[in-house]
Image (cartoon, rainbow, N blue to C red; front, side, top):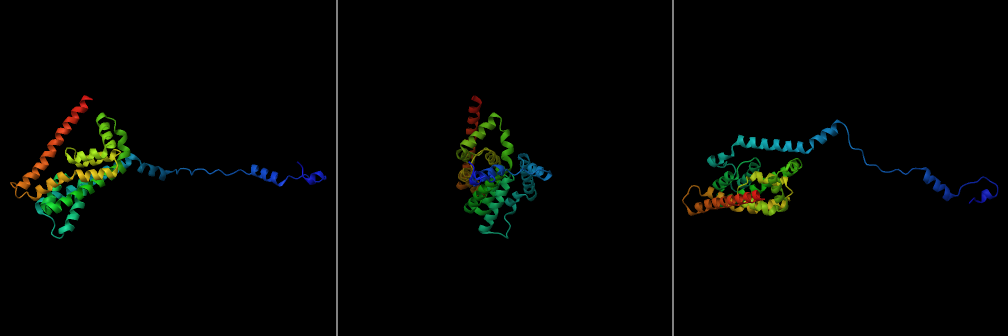
Length: 263
């Protein structure tokens, strides 16, 4: 409809509403767009360094460096030379627990470290130091394996045995890890990294490790503390606490292996 100016013979003009409509149609509305992915040499290097296989290579390098360091310092000398006299009491136990954890990450066998804990600190303080080091080392190994190794290794779980182990750890993480700690058979470091590659939760892993490691750790620590009296009842009971779970674990592993063959 024309306005009053048009009817009176003047120049036709659009109404304010029509002008606003035409302006809205004429001016395009900016559409937000996602920022473009960074390109160039630096971006390619960053993607390569953060790729799963690069992180796995970093994990292997760290573990190799840790194992080399352990071989260089020879922690087994603690059994013969004793703890340095500069540190004693609870402070020595704390330092030993930290060193214990780092040594387990570097593949040092826990039985050797448990015997050393008993020989150096006695039964009570030695058990506390060894258990603390056990949980610390397991947590560090699990974290390294989960961050640096899981993405690269999970696609490789294709065999029947590997899929069965991964499914057991992923669906029944706490129960499976508790059994692995109670009945020795799987090396400590291997259980840590297998659990990290699976979908097991961090908290169930640590709780199962702490609870399941108590009997075996205590038996080794007491044996190390009473090694000077190998005929004492306490030493014999400790040795039985080492041998019986190992025997039960071997029987359970054999039966599980036989069951998997029949499937």
